[in-house]
Length: 472
Image (cartoon, rainbow, N blue to C red):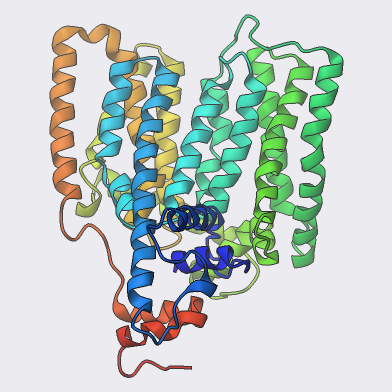
């Protein structure tokens, strides 16, 4: 289905599948297929160039496109693992800890499942991680405004890839507060003419995006309530950062413009292959997830207006189920990284006992993001592909904890940590290598999805449908 959407974009057609919305994955896949077609790896790169659906040539041509897409996600997963190492090293400055964390992440199931199958969670998780690195290193950077612009850009691209990433993205302002530092004078002081020019450049994309977002919100009749609340939340976080870490007021205002400019620049990228449905989904993401997900079904009014008390109650139930699962009733398909959560809890307690409260707060915040992401995901149907929103943050939390204890470990402690790492890697590799790791859909579901989302070429998949399938 994702290959079909990429072919649509290469044919000059708009995106049809809007559930995720999946836009970033479709664009990456469309450009990748164009490159593969240019190199002669695949025979076609657009919907119009496909052989007739009833011909014998259709299936081999389409199979090549699917495998080309799988090669892309495998390569993108490798890039993610490399960036994971570079990001942890940039935050901790510890090569050994960053390498160990990257090895655990590279061998983990959350990345393995993404490397084998085309899922929109992969670019979403990648951009969320880049957002985290940009936010966590902004305070110690000589160009924090650039980091904040990059954070806003990547966070929005993550939501454009998979809207359910919003629960992790909303935790990034808290990451900024926890990872901030009171630098002596690392903020660059450009001339007022430079500052005015940069501010105007950042304001250029912000104004039309605000107009689009609130126009779409008012069209649905929700009056832009949660959109405005998110803006206030970001502004309050920037202002609180300035108060805590003694950042001048003018720098706070410039930081707000940088974040808003990054968000707006990414939002405008969806106009490359414009679809009004995508604009509406991005502007009213809670309404979109409510109507297309299982929240409305649980509340008894699928397709209706979102009930915030219902959403809060379901998230609360998700927290209870998540804590019960992680602490008392671990699911067999979610280990071995479940044990990492207990190690992180012990590390938080030890750090707090030694009055290293800032480090304990950082590690605890990342562990809380993992729990919160799982609790929010439980509103829908939790699947293996969603692990990239959860255990990624546990691995980072464990890496930060190891970095805090690293100077005190000595050779024996570090050797013991390396031995534990090897055991974890062995369990992870064995877990990923299991033949039933990838949860393939039943033929009936795949057939139904073909007729729901791929109607122009759905006839080519007729032989995969059951005999009693209701053809239109």
